Image (cartoon, rainbow, N blue to C red; front, side):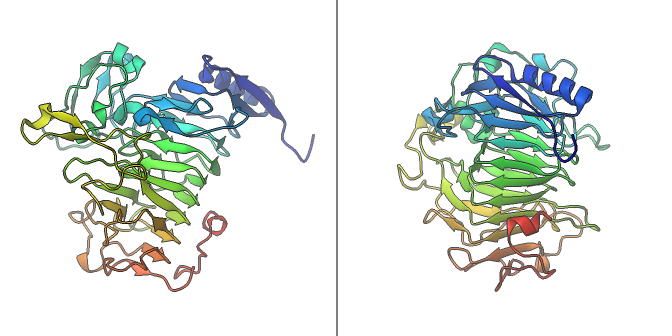
Length: 410
């Protein structure tokens, strides 16, 4: 029995509950300490999931697994496994019961469809999604809202007036929720501080705002696959290496629609942690298969929605060309590194970085705004970047850390 870990293999068929398989994994781990591999047949699984058992492995069981989306992101490929739920910040659904629907450090970490709290999580060829900012699913349409306003976070002493959220459409499959006015925090997958040594291979995480989150202490290796979102969609204080992934900017033709990829905070102001490394990644715009591109008519404001061709490889660039930013640090000390980055021509803003989340915060120094921001061998040779972004001459940080995923996660 020494020298290896016992392993249980379960299969989840289309239409069955993945939560039921996780219940079995909990029982087996508690009784015998066995790790569990869950083979999942292709299909869409609409469940809130909590991965709280060490060593859980989620694997797409298709012979030719896919992570592709179709029909503007509403449908998953026939060979795809999609794990998804629909809660978003500021909307209190009746199905939530007494749970208060805020983001932050609350129970679900920005309403994550999948929440990882245990170490050694592994996923392969899985789509992690929150449909809140993408389309209206059948379960959301059947649910009812008891509150559509959000106030300040409940742990903040100073009260602020409530923000009234727009009423969401109820038609199943509606992509109207992709419009900017509906956009809110809705994570596809989040990792707590105890979620160490996570490995996601050829997976997709998709949403619009706040798609993948990690607490300080979490460590994540994202290998290949796709990370898709629009606003600060890879965010948190986790240590994360993104290795040869495709980064998809989910933006459209609405005025001033911009994409901010990374929003790091990496520890506290006094105790900086290791942040995010993006290694040999490629950035592109969403295709019409992945996102419906809707604009608002200037004649009648919010009521005159029209369908326009989506930007991306199939249809050229949007009117918001050069609207993609590599990072908008969540705190000024947040560490973000981009190495060997390429992108679809014309989509990256020459400045590449933004101080929009930190410029009014205490301790912010405009002369050295976010000093833990680095690039190495970017496609455009980093021309036009702010002076506080360090352009490295060698693939190594000032502290001696090599710009390779394995070194990053040591």
